[in-house]
Amino acid sequence: MKELVQQLTAAYGPSGRETEVADLIEKLLKGKVDSFHRDALGNLICEKKGTDKKGKRIMFSAHMDQIGMVVTHIEKEGYLRISGVGGLNVSNLRMRRVKFQNGVQGVMVEQPLKPGETSSLRTCYIDIGAKTAAEAEKLVQVGDMAVYAEPGFDMGEHRLASPAMDDRSACALLVSLMQDLPACADTVIAVFSTQEEVGYRGSTTAAFSVAPDEGIALDVTLCGDQPEDRKLAIDLGEGPAIKIMDARSISNPALVDRLFAAAKRAKVACQREVLPYGGTDAAAMQLSRGGTPVCTVSIPCRNVHSACEIVDLRDIEGAKKVLLAYLMG
Image (cartoon, rainbow, N blue to C red; front, side, top):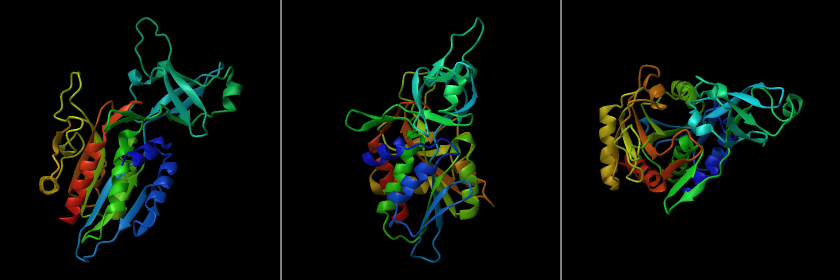
């Protein structure tokens, strides 16, 4: 699992630019699923047919995109002004190394604030080492997107820190699940979705075309075991979380119960997640067509939407055991 997570977090893939991630996943799943399909939004849809003609169609969705920055203007001195692609927090941006798809790297800087001015993306810029706008334009164009370029690293025996754990750690979970999933009664559709960070756009179209009987989103969730004001009943390394609700969807109670029952069969301790904000691809699946029963299985993650998102591999492995028990139960 560790190698999968490292491979996937290293790939470039801000919202709307997920092709590199999709290519890697398709390579990893070659020969492990019955079909691949990419739709107009770039979702990678992988299907493994069930053995029972009366079985359900179960859609799993893990989003490939990561937050990023898009160039909006190049100043005469060669500095790049930016806007956010997904939710960016200025406190996470200062003096961070970033990279563009073509390999150009830079440093995210916040300019000195004027009296009464508050931090915002308007006060930030990327320095790519150019002296003039003309020099910068040979390297980067308006509309190009950058992502965090900090290298991933180990933290102790079980934990990893890296950009893009949201949601490549869940992509790794879904890849591993499909690689090891034996024949089962239900048809399993693994959707690696696009543009989740800007409003669940990929999962919206994918859910409509897949028309699942039930949907399970795979995503990260915030932790409540850090010294901060918000307190959530989620601890890193204490097992995957089964979501009861967030700001965008309320999980189907029967599906929640079946997932907890699967966790009991798999002998995996799971946490109960109530998130008062945010959302996952479950929000899109829930409202597709005539409505779909949904739930989210979450990977606890510290420092979400930063250059050093931290996960515990034991939580990911535990989630895989739960999902295998659910599908084979």
